[in-house]
View 1 (tube, helix red, strand yellow):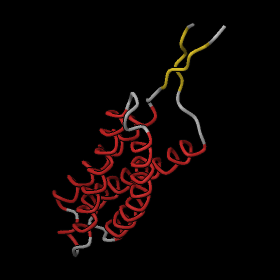
View 2 (cartoon, rainbow, N blue to C red):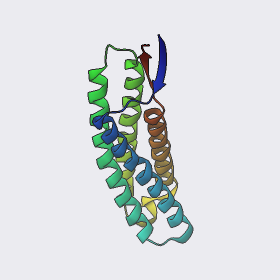
View 3 (tube, rainbow, N blue to C red):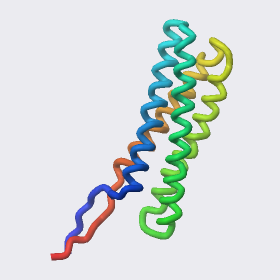
Length: 145
């Protein structure tokens, strides 16, 4: 027997991947909008960043639910620790994103500034790490001749 590794595929896994793509895109968009605001002082960029962060949090919450269900389903199987680390990265992403949303709810310059930009950068980095962890996972399948 030999083994073949390939990414796991199921309807739930596909939906999970689609939900995860939104935080990656929207937190990156918020970071770009924050950078644009710091360069132009056009207030509309902060509004755009706030809405992007809000949308990212909705999909991050859905992704956390999928990750929690996946971890609970495979808690005693190989790869359970990797799923737990992935779940913790998503939980940290949600927490930092929520603090970021609260910070962006302030008025004008204080809504972005150095702290808002840093929170957006950390959120984007965590979203990219979560995306990398999810899309780079593989599972071994035995091939019987």
